[in-house]
Image (cartoon, rainbow, N blue to C red):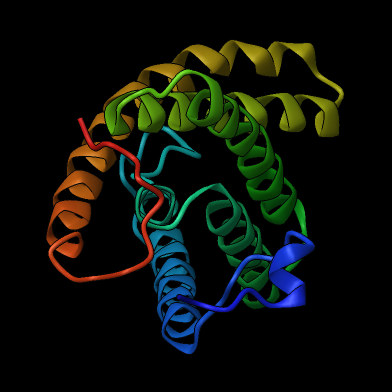
Length: 186
C-alpha cells in the first residue's frame, strides 16, 4: 500500500523524477519545433499559416499526462519561445492563439471527450481565430477579420495533419509505462 503525503492530500499533483524529465524533454521539443517553424514557410502566399508541429506536443501531453501538464508545458513553451524570438507582436499572437485554443481544448477534453482529431481541429481553428482577432485589435482594423476564412481553412488542414502525427506518437509512447490520463485515442 502506498503512503499518501500531505501535499497529495491537499491536491498537489505527484511529480516523479521520471515524469519531470519527460515533461522537460517535451518542453524542449516544443520550443525547438516552434523555433524551427518560424524559419519554415508552410505556404508562402499566406502569412501566418504554419503546420503547428509544436502544437502536436500539447496533444501528446494531453493524451499521455492530462490537462494540467498540457496547459503548463504549452504556456512554458510559448514563454520560452518568446525569449528566443522576442516579446513583440509575434509573441502576443502566439500567446493569444495558445490561450484561446487551450481554453477550447480543455473545455472539450473535460466535458465532451472529443477524439484526438476533434481536439486537434478545435485547437488549430481556435488558435487561428485568436491570432486574427488580436492582430485586428493591434492594427485597429476590423477588415483584418476577413483573414479568418484563410486561417480557419488552413486550421482544418493542419489540424488533421497534426492529429494524425500526434496519434501515431501517442500510440507508440503508450507502449512504454508512464503515468496516464486514461484518455482514449480514437
